[in-house]
Image 1 (tube, rainbow, N blue to C red):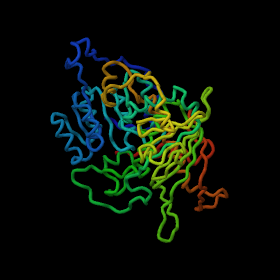
Image 2: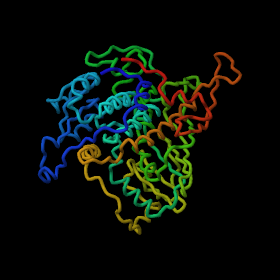
Image 3: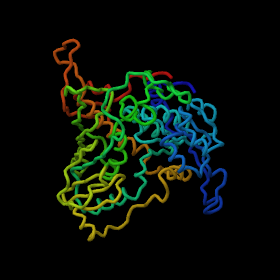
Image 4: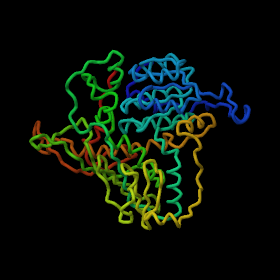
Length: 470
């Protein structure tokens, strides 16, 4: 497959046709009733990423024809290859799409964050339905490109892998909120105990031998070439800005999606952060611009929406917790312990676990008198199979890119504030080779224009500045 730069893809998006012929499969009920499965009712699925997270995702898609697998690490892919022995296998997803593109109906992307957009755009450009892991991409510009391409191809069914979007919890939470029990929400607290990988240290500079069953060049993909170091793969890449999106990127799509969707928050207007520094033995703060901090607190503000008031989202990670609600009993757990949300309205508070699970009014005794009816339709299958059913039956599932894109952009806006806290800005007097740390800086955000409006230096993190050919 020809290689495309991000700029080339931008030009493609501006000139692409708004729609192609709709892709349809005759519904199961037309072919023979419940339980009947004709060959035409089976999707041909290709997976870009076959180890790690892909293992569980593809397990949920066993009813379909997983016909092509791709992974840069043969050892990590071994289990999945054993599960799908008839599937082809390649290391380079471009080779896979070139060879089997005409037969593939849908693509699953479970690579590290920095390759999500490259793989996802390649799949959609070939008119393939797309399931892409959370977060949608590493940078806001890449997320916007994915969202715009999905919008330009409405016949494609898309889904981001934040499984809670298809769960019972978010729907129960929405029903409680829409009952008026907590009134208009003005503040949201969201937290996680992540990271559970090393985060906040310096970028490795040493070189480790490249395992013979691992393609380092393909793993790096569009990222700049550097010496191989085992610190990155297969798990801890999440804490390095060149590859991942830190604790917020890892868990934000699971935790924040519930209030974000329910309150229809849209683009934020500002974000600011405080971060935990890493200190040396001399108690001098280390500046590690290539890594996410070990812990952070982020304030993201959203404007009023119609007659709904402005909302402040306060995110904490790395073990930093919000204040314990006074309505919560001493023997009651806050969220699920490690993670959760608290929505504060002008009439009360609502608390839930990760994915919006187990929503309850505070104090929890209020739930005994709550008789909120079930008004929202439920997803009666897995998140992954809801995507498959959407393809077969012609609907967009719970976390299609039109919804998942703005959510992911908000999460990455929080990461901009984190990076801005430690950023070394050139001194205002223009002194050569001298920089200053401004500390906590509020970044003002224009979501439509995708731009920080008050600190221009931070816009270098909005879009990729380098795209390596690999």
